[in-house]
Length: 144
Image (cartoon, rainbow, N blue to C red; front, side):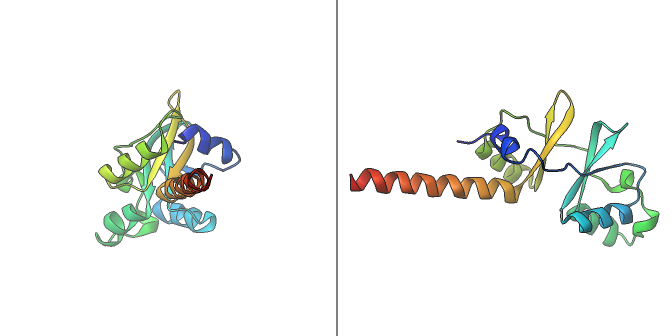
């Protein structure tokens, strides 16, 4: 089973998009739209992760509450109970955690700093690839 570290090696040039809790929701949405991402990490002092803001946060905490994106700070609507993983997590453990907590993005931390983020789409892609490899292995084993 692949690990988060394997994912990071493959995606070592992947940018980690983040903002400050003082940015407003509209600024976050613009960045998320430009980068085609579903969530951004909220950092304090440009290095300490204190939350995450996702499309789900926007829908539930801004739109449904009738707030204006340009008048609402990320600090008001970000998810502050940050659930994270480290490099030694296995991909299936990430899937279990995401399923259990009903989340779609996991920041990856090392020494309390964000070194990456893995989405449920990334996890599924890896798991499907591993399933295909396993099927090919069994096909070769059976035919030999």
